[in-house]
Image 1 (spheres, rainbow, N blue to C red):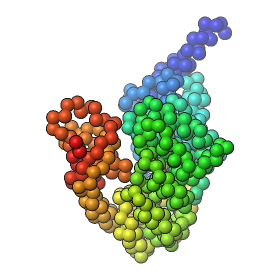
Image 2: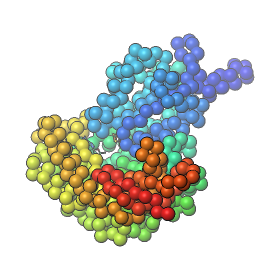
Image 3: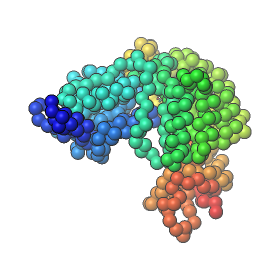
Length: 465
Ligand code: 5AD
Ligand code: SF4
């Protein structure tokens, strides 16, 4: 091959042209839609960075994209169906586009996706994202179907090119995968074994983010507090928290999601000692009944969970506590459910996410007896949510009159309110002095706000001058 031909072919590949069916197909634009958790949101940011780096351009509709990616979630059946609905829409009109399924549904369904949706060209689970450049290369050079489905990896997906979408809060993945085996959960099958990143790389990323102007960071992991530094420093999670929170310029550090089993007192001690660590812990309980926790293979009892709650309640800082709850897990009796309701009264969570149990492929709970009718799950969910709503109204009312520091994330023109968030992760919207000049100036700033009104899901206040 002559030199100029070589250069031309290299340029073509670099700029994302590829040869398919003997014709040159432009493959320069991509569209990505993300479902599921914050891990997925941040994975997508890294995928976007990888594509932009390769010369692709992002567009905001699937119709105008050459490569259409769905980063999927399979935690509940409803989430899983979303991607198949999307793919269905393009079954006839998607000619010429390449469709890619990423994330948890990709890992779970694997090559079966090609059968259900023959127009899909790429299926990649999150444990294989480090291979994305290679897989994209294969697509660009004409491979019709590429897959990345290996789970037994010790690699994490790190890229210096993440394209961060949220200008106020930056995510950093510190641990991927999950070594637990909760009976209802697909995650161990979709995200592979736990892999922690070295603390040096995490700190470097936090410092870089601070230098580019980020003041708030959220550390991510399916079981974020199971973090174990693989580098010689050997930090545990609490030590990592303290160090990230001391990065110059960092005002707020959050973390999610914690598993109660690995939630040690040192984490609360760190929050008490270091002001930049936020007053908020998300600690999914799933059920208030020890019998159900056993069936769910959660590895703690109600009493053990309560001990962790007591550490937080006794702390000098007013730590907001939030949780996840599943109703209607197989075998849940009326009495088990009652115990969950009592737990809500006892703890008074600041907020919670609640779900009807959804049977998932491969999970041990599929084989459990005592599956509960959808109607009954719905009834329990409504009762639980009504109770929690009353608790939130009561708790939030307690903030009226207090002054909270908010991080300003936006402006709601219709309501003429600034949108702020407290350290406790509560939304506190506020009015500014009527003739304060430039509104844009407040975005990203931290200001004291006096709470004047409270609803179940947010607070309203006035800026303290
Ligand atoms: N059905 C219902 N909810 C589930 N969750 C996880 N798996 C299931 C399932 N099969 C919930 C748990 C978890 C949250 C992210 O989703 O509460 O903490
Ligand atoms: Fe959904 Fe769980 Fe996968 Fe996140 S890890 S995308 S919540 S299935």
